[in-house]
Length: 403
Image (cartoon, rainbow, N blue to C red; front, side):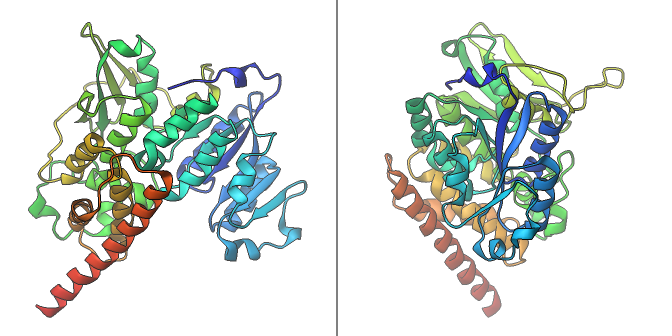
């Protein structure tokens, strides 16, 4: 992963654009920016439909531009509602216009789902470093995105806590000396349960994550372990590793965020309380380490940290993710799209919890695999997989109703 240090030599605060500013990662990002005014400032903010929240953020952080990706929501904004000195961008190309402005120093990509790919791609094309919280960008199009970053000579700095931990630990030795990385996961709200105990799980139960406060989609992904599956695929491309070098271990305290093992047997880990502001700050200020708003470990209260192997039979999503990391090609796009739709259907009560992984498995098994797809091919796979899950859900529900 190529790092661009030019942004650290600015004699002014680094100007940041936050895509997905009204989501949990976006809100935490703005908290970090606010706490480091001598180093960071908000230039632009982007949201999909949360107009009220976006306008409040723009006023508080003195944003120069806001972008609304939903045309109907953008049309509701009156010019008088905009904070003084702030301009509105709307339309299909609003995100592209925003991230490619000459004044922008860095882009935080925190839009959930495949929708975040466009902004990340546009920022890299314009030569802007990207703080990446949108794992779907690399799950869907990892090789193409990383190649674009290399061509433009700009950094993709991970914001996911696990990938940030790996990035930090990897600096303990040359890349060729790395033998393995181990992603940690809390295990979600159903750690230790068996499949028969999860047949009647409700959305309310699945949304209760034991250690992290996240949006609904990521919370469900954590409950199925699909989040960890997507992180494995992301790590495969972000760090240019073979899939066989990536493992997962459960760590319910969520204090150690991942491990890197080196050729001499040394293992480096990054530990901190479960607070997303730390990996966000590290990405925004890299390579500097400065005091910020994040919580610290309380060494006086520490007693023990626990680890256990994931149950791949009860949580097959993780097994699917390991397979997709090995296969590459179109598999990531299909898995991501199928999972997004299946999660939506589960939250609406149209699919059972265990059907989320089954739906993803079905889409993967029936798609036309290509090992070297173009970006257009990947978007086509995305569209196909979404329709496939809608058909699969409809057929399954019709079968249930007929019984």
